[in-house]
Image (cartoon, rainbow, N blue to C red):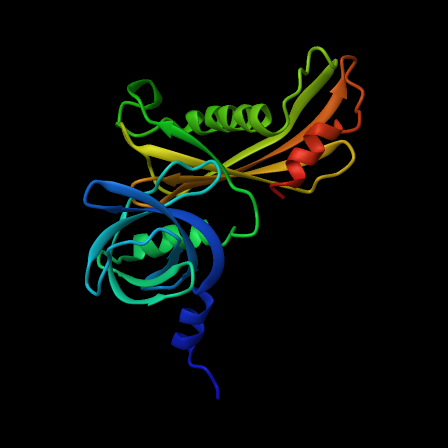
Length: 244
């Protein structure tokens, strides 16, 4: 049978994964495990017996290694099945929107990779006279994201090791503006990891509405104190390969 374009689109958006989420029922938060995510809903399993029935409502917060919680998705149970030691629930989004879908896709397109994101809140000092974020701040945030990335996954004392981290290229492509008190997630991934250099790719996303604000790139080379290029330290290379 030949699939229609709509069927192909829906199939592409179904992801079979294992990712923790939190669900909130009344005031109680419980961490469960997603089995699959679709365009209109999700399936999740839990070992804790939840008192959920058909049409019961709850909120879902998607989680990942370095991301706190996303804007909640309102859901309702449409089906469940009791297994030996678990319960499998099928739920639909009741506040479904294109923004929700965009956020889901951003999360799960990286399902087999580690995800790193730096959380930034926009303050007055980040904005210009028009009230949106000054363009140079996006470069500054690249630096903050990069530093936190190295600190967490490739801790190294560059001065002690007598290694220089040199930025050969830095680019930002602007998509939509950010404003005062917006919360921004800056995702980072690595690419083109070579003997003495690597690339860092950045994606700036508004946490509240999932809009892409900008994307950018840095090319990094490593050198000794005289400026002579040297091999990427093993601890940095290993950390970078986890996010390539």
